[in-house]
Image (cartoon, rainbow, N blue to C red; front, side, top):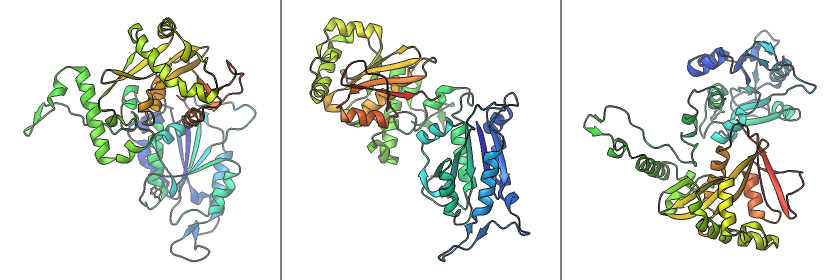
Length: 409
Ligand code: 6GU
């Protein structure tokens, strides 16, 4: 990935040379180039700001230096394959960067946003100072590039540089190869079901009279997982109740017990049959299709399904409350039979299951695919929100819509 950062204080960005980020730069994983905006001024004082039209306090950054700077960076050589130091050959259409303008008035940076940015080949960050950059710069580049104004939180900094460093760090660490242990990425705060991370402990077992919670020394991994989950929920409820109430999180506390997710076995077939019938009635009614497979399959069919698909079941206090399955078909991870018990719908469990089944895709999978009834408005909305878009492929059967989403690495 290439990242260009334009600022009147390029020295402010020196920490980007340190630690893991510095190593990723030296190793060629990421090509960060900083630029001094004043290079694109032409007066003796290298003026970059002026008073605001309409009056008011503070200064506004002039459009001309920004225009020249961004034009020059965008027109510079396309991102290079820094690992080999050889320029990447860009076929026909020239690569254009995503332009990011850090601003307290921007959209708030979130982990899903960082993940989306990490999939871009080239980012240009334009760090404003003072009261901001003349709006015409943003309007002008919005016509030729994707432009995003991004805030890192509800507070005000003196300029975009620190925010740019926050954005760069949040994005760079998601690049494949940035951190050795990929599991440490998926288990951290905001990555699992929208919950904050549980508290962690290391040796010694007793410190200044405080003991590590005994469950962590028990060696019982089931109990440890349940305890950590409980702690994560408590923390989230106390510190960030907004996360529990957002549709992104699994509102597990309402389910009255810890959820257990396991690979389905033949023994799950009877309950799965019951659950899928309960779940597909409304789908069948909405689409006027009472003969759909989930409603008419026999117990033997469900057993066969478990054996031919990677199937997961979710249990709450022993009760089977959800399931999803998938299998690989020519690079496509086909997801199906996503279901949540009717009385537990609307709490994010379906979304969690979808993310879980997506995460099981083998490395060869480049696309996720699923389908739903063309009149199942709720499903269509939920899948759209999860990044799926209708595909132009002919549907496997009439009355359904095939939805796809490219896999993000
Ligand atoms: Cl991106 N810039 C500035 N100046 N202040 C901020 C911010 C950005 N995000 C939060 N506060």
